[in-house]
Image 1 (tube, rainbow, N blue to C red):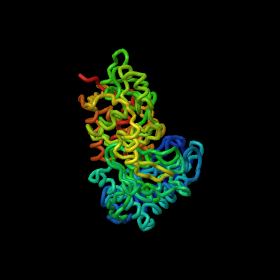
Image 2 (cartoon, helix red, strand yellow):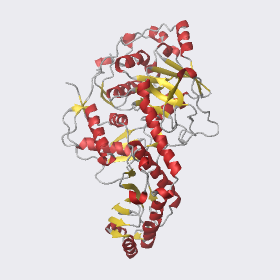
Image 3 (cartoon, rainbow, N blue to C red):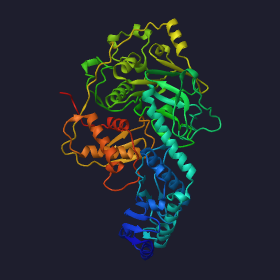
Image 4 (cartoon, rainbow, N blue to C red):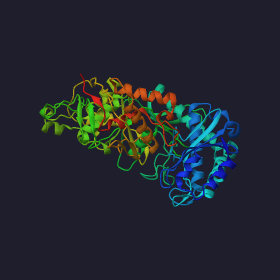
Length: 564
């Protein structure tokens, strides 16, 4: 392992040479307070920047053990350090030549506290992974600028952001405490019979559809209605009160622009912990909650959608349904059945993104079009069966159909972002104004058949390209993820893409799709995100089993075998 002085001398000596000469620097360097690892050197100043790591021994970093002794606190500590390094490097970055010259960049975190391969903290070491654009003039090495970047600028950033004594200890503790509180709140949901909890005082509105930061000026703090108020313990914030949403079928109703979808979105994001100041730090949701919607044009492979769609023209089976171009109703039915197959416990549904003919078929339409001529059984007739027969709860935003009053356990009305429990009133209205519609689709939901995965015998290694948070490509096949709404960072897509690649190239005997998912998630639980890459990378972010399944289900080459 060479020293910082030797590294500086080597960089100065490389001045003016062709850019590929940088590759000779690959290796480890003992700096004053840390070790610098140059893991991968870019071949060109315009190529992806070089992959770099720093490791700081805990004897130098000196983070108190209580900040990393629990898994959730270690994740929160690593998250905090990633954010600190991101802010400091963004302020430090300056153009030092052509291409990416002078860039120091780490993965950009969202509002969620997530496990990322960018940082890890153990009893022995603090490690950070990021990218550096080694300086060049044209395609010639700018040796002196590189020496300054790696032996002065970078050590300064490490000193600012990875040494406990140089950080705001109170803010860091609060960050870790906030994550632990949310984790504990979420752990209490099941024993309280809840699927979600929204704390009093939470700020739910966001600045815009593309800015997830909290709306600050006009936001109304959340206040739970007394009849739905529960009290849950927290190790740091103390006991908290807020609205508990119970298992079963819950409607969120109200006029337009009164906060229905805002509440649902907060609950949807409650599967993740959030940073202090986000406003949703104490909004927590069952970790197996999944948002589903209509999705015109998506592919469906081998899904049993018969509980919702049956008796198609020309006798097409819906027990093993395949299409490259699903309709809104068919795609929504498929998404619900896929969610049930992979173990979702809560469905989150917004009528604004649902297919109307999938959600409701009212009495007048039933009178005009006989059931024998309508293959779709609407969701209204299956939502209670899903809960009764499979324990799958539903939280539904509904502003246009009071028919759902007949099947709801709880009805919450939003008025200017303030919730009211109107369950009693809704039931009285349902009794007074009976719809007279006939339930359709039988009295039981049924037991859908699962699917079998069969990896190709000689799959090769397809190229995987991540375009952004909403699209990746496996081989020549793009996968549109625009409707997978609980993916919040592009690093999750990169990690899912790597998981898919590992699954494709690993030989499998015929097995259920759920077994394949379980195997992948077990490897991740045991080995961490490094399971997904043969070399150290800093751009992977943890994901849920449900998102891995959702991405696989939208892959048009999904290797599912017919039953029998």
